[in-house]
Length: 379
Image (cartoon, rainbow, N blue to C red; front, side, top):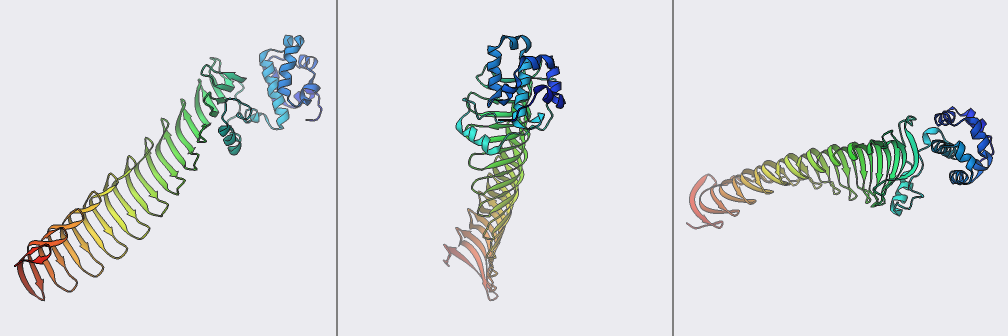
């Protein structure tokens, strides 16, 4: 309940409302004589009371056209809210709508009222809730062509709600869309699509902050997942694509190139246990040339295929042992030279990690050529 006041005095003290009334061709004298301002404004629901008075009073219908009624409705909303004219549209849009799902209503309460940044465009017509052909309910501004344009809110028949700016009947500019599954997008819109910069928050707490194109994460952005993962980098068509840093919940991390959500190209993967790989990737696997260093001191510098040592490469151990040769499926296979830390060495054929075939074994300065089978001397 607000304190009593004379409507005409209130209008004269507030140039914004005086402008509103004048723009609707409503003379102040007619407004004062026709409306029982005291009763209307002191009521608990002035907007509904206004509608009732208009329906039941032929004099009001004579003096007040639709535009004037809309203006007075805004005036009463303003007085009861106790805030400035830019707050006219900044009221909860979901609370009293039967179209909105309970989840959307709760989410709007949690997020708070959407903040319109630009001043209200007085050249546009403002209307109360209007039903659209698709079953949605729109409250806000319209242009002369009869299109939603400017500030407005729309509650869709499927239960979700949009608050923000419109242009020629489409979401354009800043806006917030609350889905009925508790997901929320707030940011830039172009022709009904997320485009520009925006924040998409999922119901499980996962969130993407960054650039959008044609309703997809596209450009630079940061995504955090509910399980603790984080990616900061480039995106294309909703996928990690380009350069980026991915950190997992267990503190493993990859900094490098991506393609279609997979590690692809050059990149460095560091494990939480201290292991590190610096090299080429293909389809999420170590592939082509790269260096793997284990936390215990081992090191492999060479070729890879499908995450395994494959091709030519050099493997060294912390104790000083070294193998320089061919590999197949993570095993010494083909020709290779193995140097032990004590000075002995073997140069010859290998098969599945074992000396196999013809090879020369050197120990204490003496070299002998022998045939080997599964790691054992044959002759």
